[in-house]
Amino acid sequence: MASNTANGAAPAKSKFDPNFTQHVVDLMSPETKPRHREILTSLIKHMHDFCRDVELTQDEWILGVNYVNSLGQAYKKNRNETWRVCDILGIESLVDEINHKIETEAGREPTSSTILGPFWSPETPFRDLGASVVQNMPADGQLTFFHGTIFDVDTGKGIPNAVFDMWQASTNGKYDVFDPENQTRHNLRGKFRTNEEGKFWFYCLKPTEYAIDTSGPSAELLRIMGRHPFRPAHIHMMVTHDDYIGVTAQLYPSDDPYLSTDTACAVKDDLLLTFKPVENEPKGAILDVEYNVRLCSKSYKPDSTMLMGNANQNKF
Amino acid sequence: MASNTANGAAPAKSKFDPNFTQHVVDLMSPETKPRHREILTSLIKHMHDFCRDVELTQDEWILGVNYVNSLGQAYKKNRNETWRVCDILGIESLVDEINHKIETEAGREPTSSTILGPFWSPETPFRDLGASVVQNMPADGQLTFFHGTIFDVDTGKGIPNAVFDMWQASTNGKYDVFDPENQTRHNLRGKFRTNEEGKFWFYCLKPTEYAIDTSGPSAELLRIMGRHPFRPAHIHMMVTHDDYIGVTAQLYPSDDPYLSTDTACAVKDDLLLTFKPVENEPKGAILDVEYNVRLCSKSYKPDSTMLMGNANQNKF
Image (cartoon, rainbow over all chains, first blue to last red; front, side):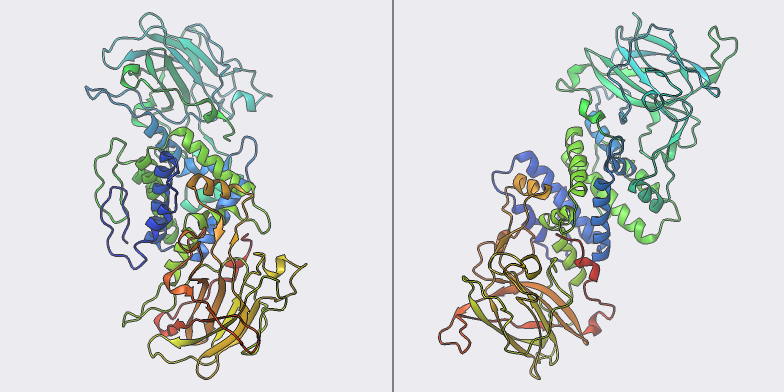
């Protein structure tokens, strides 16, 4: 099937009106803001090409209209089904990559970004290096000594005074704010400031996988695609420093069974953790994991900003 | 910007992960139904290409998520904002073309199809040839003598016993069911059966343009695009015969100011009407219009069906 490709290739002969898509695009007035025009032009072209490529039937189209309506109808606090559908289709993860991809002149790349998720807290307290974020130890928790270095991707030197902000769910798959019966405020959250060598260390849990909420229409999409609702286990991190481009990511145990089938399509190769068993650890940790973070100087992207605060609102 | 084009062209080198889109597609299980796989594969590719083409920012993506949610939240009886957005973006009209495009071996085409709209009634009564559908004459109504022939596009012969089902809004922009104060049931609706020569004739009003409902989020999209909310004036028709592929369309006065900027992108060149002034017409008509309809034999598309009944439900 012919497509009006975005890169300007001539469309192959189509049995459908070859001028229709451009007609719809041209309905925009000269006063349309350039960015609105750019986005809507591409959206119209891709949606039309999609309809032509699959020769969408009217019944299928109506089914799609009804499905889109069902997403907004299911909306409520802490349940954003449209957002979740974007996760399932890889759109949130792709937008994250588009907004955070960076490469130095020498071809070096900072640690990959991945989706923020809905559970970051701006109120997480700073803790001393070596402290534990485990305020409420679950019976099946595996205490882990987590340590690493945050370094400059160009110089290879450690970055002092960088902030490693982390958060994770407990073994029941819940974050502190959604689990008041079992967790005190700030449980499994902590901000750590790197020492003069760029090193940080603390205690946490080995993370455990959990399923996304399957009570809404997004679960129907998963069912149609034959996909499970699980996210691989992960520890969230948000790494910042005044002189460096921040990195927000999720770190996954390298032995997690859901790495290649993540519901949110948010796993990247450089975000894997290897947990090693340890014995006689001073604070009783039974696992040890090292993770080093590469940051790029802000000089590569002077207008970079951290993920907007509103990205954290009204998600699930 | 590179795109994974639907026609299989190799994507140009992109700065983004070239394997991501295929990864998401491949998450579908082998048990996914083939048609679901086809539709979702194309949808994922086009949505990803859209995000990459415009380098969608996170704030823009969140705005889009919120907008999609607002469509479903605005849903109520007789107001389907998702449907209306599809009209504004030309999607309903395109899907209509995809489902009704037909061409004979000799390259002849039947009368174009266009969108059904929400106001067709399955209960419209048959009227005698020469009757008037104007039960309630508005003060500014222009009585029109409407006549034509329904003929076979291959043989050029008139088709006896075909049904010309028509409906139109009154001069206040309202259809009978939504205007009980001014209109009796079946006002401006009628079904006419062609005579032995394939001819039909009746009296109606010259149609007048009206604006779509602008109280919901679809109007915000029109505003961003710098577009007006008007549909050109039109008379709806649904032409059927047991041996022919039916045609559902809208017929527009050729002098309507909104022909090229129809909100629903549903105007086609062969659906225009030329209204000619007449004097001393026996029943007092002041305008005369002739419109002939070309039908294709069902042998060209044995599995063709009329537009599904559910297409008429829950639209505006």
